[in-house]
Length: 294
Ligand code: SF4
Image 1: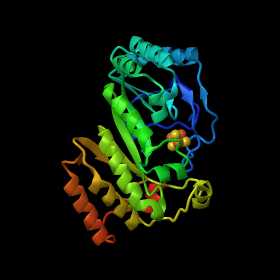
Image 2 (image 1 turned 90 degrees about the vertical axis):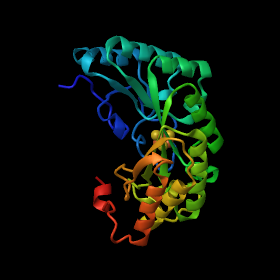
Image 3 (image 1 turned 90 degrees about the horizontal axis):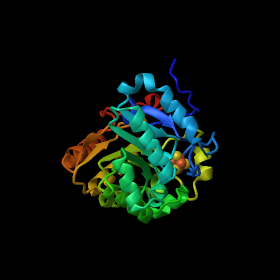
Image 4 (image 1 turned 45 degrees about the vertical axis):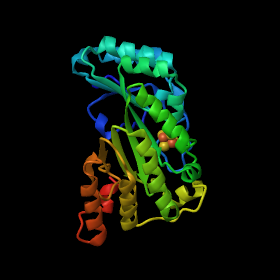
């Protein structure tokens, strides 16, 4: 039997499929984004340090197999510098072959730490932060109640990068519907260009509790988009990206069109693929709706 009992629901990025997941916090400390239902069933709390350390100790029989650790839940990086530093030291003590530790973070969690603290966390083994920025458009960020702006996002992510932390950034395709589509694509690309993340991915807005539920929480006019409009928005976004070397993926289950490449090296290839799909949507291999809901 696996030694750790998780507090469900539990989420992790796809690239952490082979990582040991340690739940250091429960839920999301913000928990107010209008599109997000990941942690609405949980109240946010910080787990006791000795409980988490006991779970790490329970993994001792498997210590040599643990190469990657992902800190859950929603924004485990909200933990104080001291708590994170102690945790990283414990992880390295118990798992001698550990290569990296990662976590979800919000821009505000990064900004709450000094440059020196971020650097010390990197040196202690914190290598990647996953940040769902969702959009770079301030009007839309306000509509979804993200509690962040383009400025806070850029400032925080540049700060983390300067400290040597790799960034995996998520943008939400279709987030503002038809009304915000162009400005969402253009301003998101502008923010991403200023961050130059190592990894960039897009997911598509979905409605786990139905569209009406989302619309009631969206503080603006939301007009839903069809597949072609969503893919057109992706085209506008990619068109405006000016990246040195970011690994790009739109392969999350929510996407209709799977795109993969390194930007900007593969920008023209991706744009050609999008143009082909827009020209002949019927002939394109788009992920069927039933597969998106799995
Ligand atoms: S900060 Fe992230 S996890 Fe928290 S409510 Fe917003 S999208 Fe969801």
